[in-house]
Amino acid sequence: MLKVLGFSKTLLLATSALYSLTAFAGGHLPGEKDAHEHHDQHQDHSSMQAAPAPAEAKVSFIQPADGQVFNSGEVKVVFGIEGMLVAPAGTDTPNSGHHHLLINVEKMPDMTMPLPASDNVRHFGKGQTETVLMLEPGTHRLQLLLGNYAHIPHNPPVLSEVIEITVK
Ligand SMILES: [Cu+2]
Image 1 (cartoon, protein in one colour):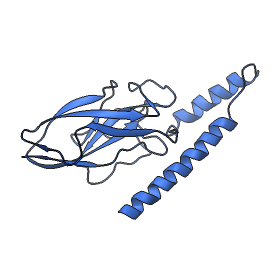
Image 2: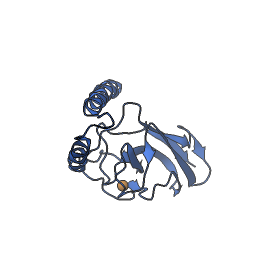
Image 3: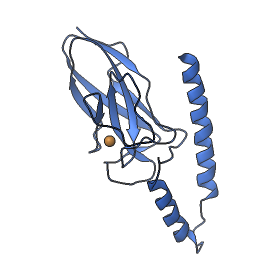
Image 4: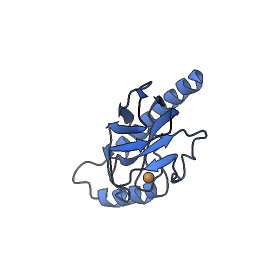
């Protein structure tokens, strides 16, 4: 598992670097007369697939803490984001997305498709950055995953560490 994570991280960094280079190479100086055409092409292209995520993009839990134990199942969760912006679903802003909270997910959803919505995969499409869960007693695994305006994870996916909390 650790090896897989290590590999993913390397791949993530390598892919992000590639995207950064591509973005740079495709960039235009002010006054270039074909800038508009290129911009439009880029928009069309990005709507067909996952949006690139900058290398420094990161989502994480501000709370709860990994391993935290609760006496009640009412658990406030606060989402953190770095290197990208939160934008509501339907708003195609570069380097943005909205939070998805994965709760006790056994099998990761397809990262190339719009994320399903269920009790285990919750969308915060209004751009919310916190929520209050009502959890059953037991241990629960939580993970954050950013999705673009169309609920598709970025490439590479902007995914938090998994944290595990316990409700007594
Ligand atoms: Cu969504």
